[in-house]
Amino acid sequence: MPAGLARLRFPKALDARLQFLLDEQGRRGKLSAEEKKEAEGLVQMAATLSILKLGTQVKMLKP
Image (cartoon, rainbow, N blue to C red; front, top):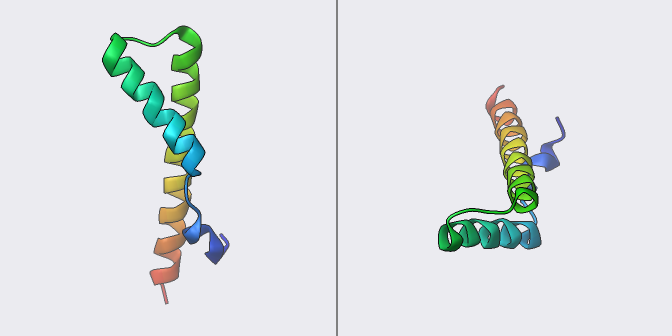
């Protein structure tokens, strides 16, 4: 994996959108089917990025 991958960040606009959807869920008690699908996709993207970054960091620690 490229070393630059460790510096990647979840884009601020996507993070803000996910936070908005989570706030809406908390306020309304649920999301529409479309909003839920969008939120799940954003969570999956964030999780995938975190896993890739972790893998890169582990490889950088190995001699």
